[in-house]
Image (cartoon, rainbow over all chains, first blue to last red; front, side, top):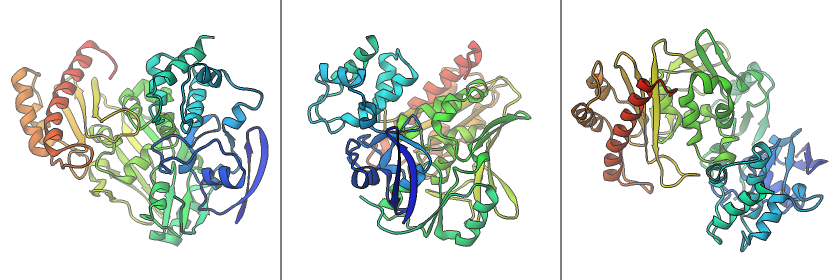
Length: 151
Length: 290
């Protein structure tokens, strides 16, 4: 067991971990942060995406020990002071059905809009190409991200 | 799926400490950069190292430098960093274009070009580009540095020439002194996570020299020396393209797998080679950057 310190959703956190534990496991099981989902658990589906120092990453492919001293933001952090524009737009557009992919998609879209406030549809598609959704067929999700950039 | 075995995690702050660890653990150590391959392999028990050596804390490993007409890409440089680098955009736009075809943003934010060549899968997107530029792999052990030409790097599918006490510190690429243009054509089933079904890279020079390399159509990515020899000194025409295709098809050995059949790969190789040749010629003549 070793102790790691990192910033999680704007708060300093300290947690005891084993080297083999992934960030996803530690977030969900040790810290109770449940928005990142375990989908494929091998980096293909995007359901476990979180922001690491502002960049979207697969938390299932990162050892928790690697984030010692880094900053992690999950959907809990994004919506700390109320829903973000992206989240509002997803609701307004009925973008999700089961919602399992939603946190990962919100993370990916948030990273995009933080770096590029007026992305083209192609840029939005490219950004979300690593997030799989089985319910709504992507179109309402893409439209929702577009709508979020218009306001 | 969790990683089921224990290991020691090290994050050395300098190269020497990393090399000492490699010497100590040898084959029982795995080097960790982006982890997008290694963590999956550890979950699936394909790799079960005693020690994981995270090299992201070594400053030089994170650098992209252009000095003396030579590009250096450190072992921890991610595909996203390559895409965003002004040096890459200015001198090696082909590396940017290739990097944009690798997986998706959240993988590219972590995955490294050096990791891609160390995993050494037949479909490694980085390798055809490194092959056409005659890049060198820089390997270091605790006593000496070794330069391995990328054409000698592969010892077989998923096997490399790297020794167990060596660490790849980066890649070096000499900027060609002749006017040139290139392209990387990748075929996948969909954008996102898919690996290449067929990949071909062409670098054309103003004196009608064409460097051609492919991936995903043989056990290792390779240069197509037969097609290159045939094309050398020739202006591209319909007949020349057709004949060059025949040369190229003799050099590939595609297999049928979950991503494509052998026949489809063979057919598409020829289609994409032609497409690529036409693109590089247009770019060379139009003065357009790569």
